[in-house]
Length: 183
Image (cartoon, rainbow, N blue to C red; front, side, top):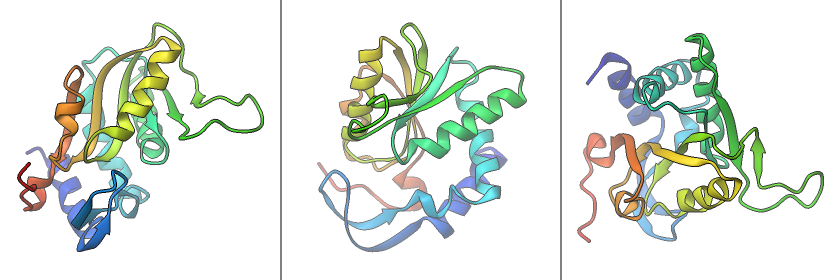
């Protein structure tokens, strides 16, 4: 494991991971929770995350990166910045969970156009349902999904439900010392 990825894992373990009784976005119950927002709004974590995301995606030939609000927003922002630092253009965007009732009433915010190659982002994936919502909107625009990138794959079906896309988790829940439930 490279240095940035290793440090990122340690930071997520201390800042974002906890045991308890939780209900996930998928509706599933869990004895542990990864609250990435406790980590990804920290300066050191942002730097580490942008480094890891750059290394994972720099050879994908993408034009844009984003996904469903809220998890994808900071990820898209740090990726766009890191790409700029390397002299490469990258559009960041996010997909609203619901259409806004005012303004342009669009679900996709940012610049996303037909023909663009996209890395879809999310922080933590369980079944992949949230990412599939984002992908539907991205494909409606006419953009092509090149890969799905997440910080943590809980190993509870996301890879399978996203089977037709290149799936690139930074970590799996096993990296946190947790075995996923038997399916």
